[in-house]
Length: 324
Image (cartoon, rainbow, N blue to C red; front, side, top):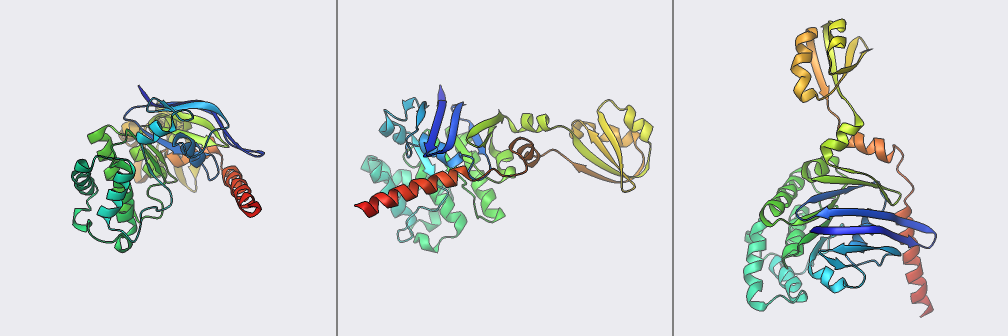
């Protein structure tokens, strides 16, 4: 069964369309990466799926429940790690998890054993009784993941889960995300600006721009659509022999060196070097998700329609408050 299924999902704020006819299906146990420039519609889409924002039109089912007619059932089956920190600094880790457990109506006899299990999962057992205000950014993020999981959700939304973390903390969070998938078959929806993160974690990636999903495939397939790897050679190069190789797509001179476009450098690099002549230096540049993003989303980040829309929404809310 699909964990998430949307059909022509739309969200408009006044004259701005933040999400524009998104239809997709995410199977159970998949890590789905949602990439896009600022204002592309990522957060709005997740907010609709999490029943925090009502769609203008279209339908969606999350864990088999309709987001409009069955919002409470949807919420029972999802966990969320927000982009902005949301744990209580004045509580301990254990107290934060206990409060969340009570809000979700978990049986009292199950709460403490589950808290212990979640703290162990994110390596915070030894800091369970410490106030969160003493935590590092990476520790807070791990606690938020534990909180999002404690009620046993089938689906976990991670909105920029490693934003602002140092490289070591990011890798620790990545490790926990992989463990979730392997140990619990949790479906994970991940938004991120880190291309390496999406490439490493996601089974499939959807690229969203101006509210539309413009590409959807595995990281490897998306990179293949962009094209060739590049190999830079310096030395006495046998150009005719290189051009004769079936996996070589282009041979160019650049600043006295050679730039070779080849298919699948991992499999074909040795054959290229064997035929290339007396090679002194080699540099390989493989296609990355950065290349994919630039190709499909464009070099210019689109105007922040989503942020503009949310700004309109906030102004409407403020005006209503003033009128009251």
